[in-house]
Image (cartoon, rainbow, N blue to C red; front, side):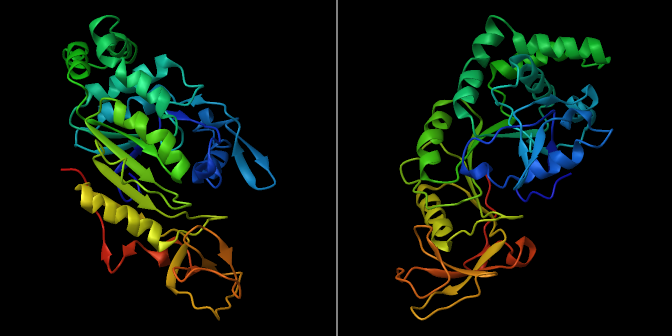
Length: 327
């Protein structure tokens, strides 16, 4: 099970990734993968990271988990919401189509579960999911993957391959597709791909939010928006107006809004022109992302933010929890 606020469990049939944008800089999964690489029980993490001056970083190698990990959702009867690949990106360029087929086959075989897939590579996701219907009608690749798993693992699916065909043909209504958005450039690049692909639910994860983002013209066809600041070593602060702007745009568009966390840094008060702060634990953060320890020109919307850790910072935005989700 998972401590991630917007899901119930994580499912990691693959491991490993690559740094592709600023949101990856302090990725928690790199640190976890480096620890797991030395564990004999998780050999597929070996070689997925290497040490640098700043700590572990991805090498770009992808490890495929053992079959017992791949098929774990098949053995769980209770309806569960799974975040797929919290330790990787299913649509990483090094992940073979055959592996993606097997992941989608598992999701199709368990319609009582909800699967949330998040990517920083929406162009490949778009190409794959847009072709699923055609594959079901012509090649039947996901159906074939399901048949192979049933045969190889002794899984009694009870007509599973035909159910996979029907699920894929109907659009996999239990699979939610999302993209990560950490700044305006990534919003401009990634969201149009998400809007153009078929999905039961399309969602945005604006985490870690490292700059202001305007979603006003991007919320058409979007069913859910998650916002969160960065936590962990080297965390960057989030200005409260960045979260408020997205929340207000979601409210205006009727899109559910989920505020996940402030992260390591919490805004404590609006800055005043005479402010001086302890740069070891506090900063003055301007709406454009500029940081200062005081006594410099900054706009009146600047805030004092303090590094107090994720748990102490919490997830209260303007005196309330925001935990909205699609129906």
